Image (cartoon, rainbow, N blue to C red):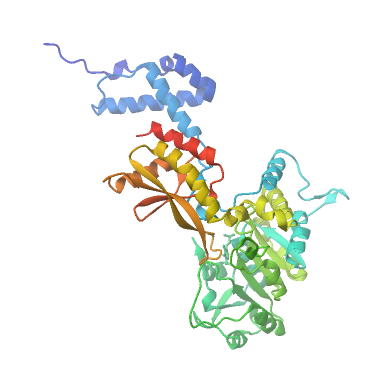
Length: 470
Ligand SMILES: *Cc1c(COP(=O)(O)O)cnc(C)c1O
């Protein structure tokens, strides 16, 4: 009787032999000799480990090893930060990168990346210029403020303003406005890091003018009003309007800062949404400084704005922390292009993706869903049913938290008596596609909200890759 021939470590292909195979040579042409050599060693290590564990009946050929190394290199070459389809129904999804930029902004950012630009250089005089010069006048024009500056994001804007006006002093805030934005951005913690003593006034649901008046002392550096952007306190409530606060603080010579959060430069009622206070309104109400985000409703790159009184902006600009919070030329170029679109409000909703997506109606989205039902069902196979379903989208990033947008989705359910696990399995496979598709599971269905889907052909092409996976 023959003894079975067990593969032996000694017969493993040598690295050189693997590199010499046609597949090895092809891999070297694509990825370079050093990465391929390392990947081949990795693949051989794996074979060795499986051999020692008794999990391998026969040895791989050198060509097999080269192919394994190639697929490892292909996986590593795939960008981690690559496009995906956001079908969650949340338009400004912080975890998915918030606003999509206008083509004008993309072009401006790309040009700035490739080339030298007059970032801090005055072309007319040939002398040093300022970074803010590229957007200051636009921000003044669009908000009605005296002056403006730009930093990394709105969290940075708030931190910088608190530190500039309140270092070693007190800031008065209503207990109803001590927000957490998510992650570690909690107003009391930011205050502490800015070196400001927080003076809470009023109660969670009611704060009166006399609460602020009683807290104002020579130690007060600022009064802060925070737009409660991600929640609403309803019922027996009282808050002091920004206008009234401006006069209370102003009478004592203390600046009022209004953190608007999302902030918008246009009245959202124009596209059928609820009215969200515009930056221009906040400035007109008498706030000395207003802070807001660039990548929420404004629809631009991640940035934060501080607009308001000229003398206070000058003080902010003299703060040494400003340098640590500034934006680079790429974002500044994208921002300038985005802000310029606001000069033409009639075409804004067509050109600015954030507003365009928010403005899509349920009828329009139902039509998309109807077009896609059959082709998506064909790609998912007989294990799933696909139907058009009404759903609601949300703006996201804390803007208008109670406002939902009537939308339409593809509702995918397991066919017959397949288990709920099938749906999670499908969600996982969709996330694993070359262009991942992210939906949301709701009451036994995987919902693909179509509000943010504009490239229908690309979406179907991505689903084509489902066939390959089990
Ligand atoms: C979102 C938000 C912030 C933080 O802005 P980022 O742009 O995310 O840094 C601060 N304050 C309020 C009220 C917000 O809604």
